[in-house]
Length: 139
Image 1 (cartoon, rainbow, N blue to C red):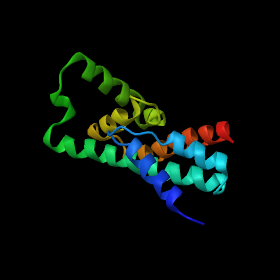
Image 2 (image 1 turned 90 degrees about the horizontal axis):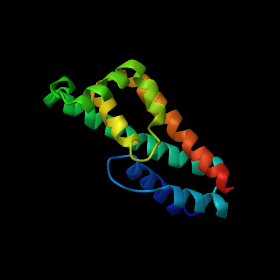
Image 3 (image 1 turned 60 degrees about the vertical axis):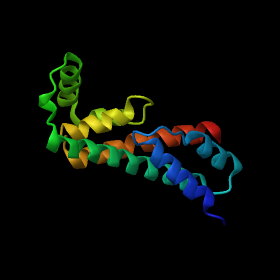
Image 4 (image 1 turned 45 degrees about the vertical axis):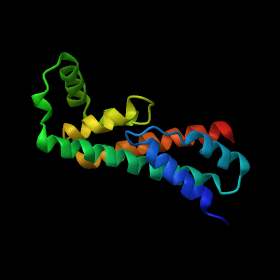
């Protein structure tokens, strides 16, 4: 079996989960509908790539906090985001799969230095559920 499709899916889902634009849903849908690979493998590869991309984004925020602590920002919107993420903590990262707000959410969570292990687990859960739903919708 040629693994080019799975590597393409992995990199597409990884890039889609960083601050760079991208979309892996179409490729996931194609691989699921063609049934070249088992459903569980396709969803696992997409989830792994997307989760690792989210972790890179989280770590970028974590590193930025060294140079520019979040508390240095005093705009009203920044304070609102900080309050919400502080109030709900890593649970907010279940929404990291959402378009437009998901990647910045991971970034800000890292910037605020939310608890790392729960953050990683909740990013993984959210992103896996996303690909599972997309895969089931296509199959």
